[in-house]
Image 1 (tube, helix red, strand yellow):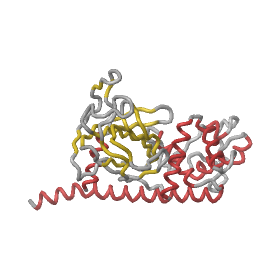
Image 2 (tube, rainbow, N blue to C red):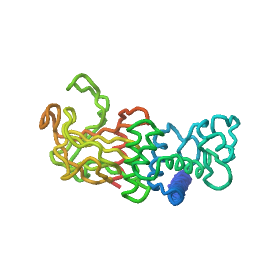
Image 3 (cartoon, rainbow, N blue to C red):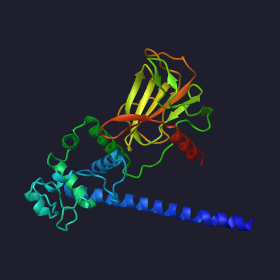
Image 4 (spheres, one colour):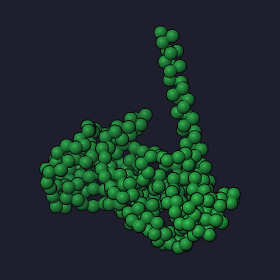
Length: 319
């Protein structure tokens, strides 16, 4: 028995050590990123939370991490180096001669797109063409992304970072208080008939009328109101560019409105059975929370199955 226990400990020990190392590295990375954002703010007067929000947005829309850089912002090579700089010479003065936008952010005389400080300085320099006010930054972002939802999402992430004063916002919560009676299973893809044949894009969590519904992540309220499918519903977008959809509610938290900042665990409404008709329709199905998640990659938005997230958040909440 002792031998078996020792074998298990020896097997698990490397896993736990590597996990601790990974968590420590992640924490150090967040500190280093914050230092860069604050340094760039001091040099350019562009608020750190906008720089952090742009970086987070760029990280969100990438399919996979392309390198180990802390700054995820990228520029096309012809824009960075200039159209005539065919050899992609990194000398900052040379790049300016060819009307490239690459900047030297660390003082080594080079504008290297693989260098985090240079990349951040280049984005700041791009924004400075329009100015440092919130409206100036919004115009700069529009000229960079050419898509309104991208600009709106970055503004929302910036608002969250500004509110909490940090970029370390990784907490989450299960949408129903654990002390209440509830049940759920994977209902993704089930057939739905109201309004035409369609599939179910979410997970239904059945609970009693009036059971509190909580925000699951840090985010900004984008929608509060009625939808003929979802009834009384709330839409919240988080810092990972994921849209969280809470539907069939019985009501909203008093005073909740579009633009409000929420954190995990904040009560935003209560379970109901609203929907499938004009405003006020209720009782066409048992009371439950329809919880949906949607991802935006900078070009389009799509739904994905939230069930695994809910199971993980529920387990974490119990612990």
